Image (cartoon, rainbow, N blue to C red; front, side):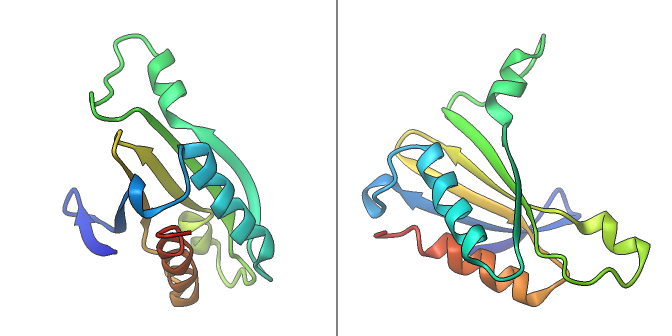
Length: 130
């Protein structure tokens, strides 16, 4: 898993998984993996799955990179505290999954809660040889 800064502003985690490294055959199976982890978690709550590819493809004059075959986000929240209104700016969480043909890309923005990052990283890495 690589940690980097996207657009010189957004701290993200990114993991490339060759399809030969996982039993998941498509984005929906990867999303199902994350949904199961979220439902098992004592604090996390599943909110929705968003088909980013379908949304973007439906827009006039949209652009999708040729290598992206599918792309969905799973949206959920770890929030067990609401200490200030500002925390609403960084919730809920989302993990993006893209199918690049021969591999998946799993990506998420760094959370202010280290335990949330650890969980999302662990869930992502568990996809390999799962």
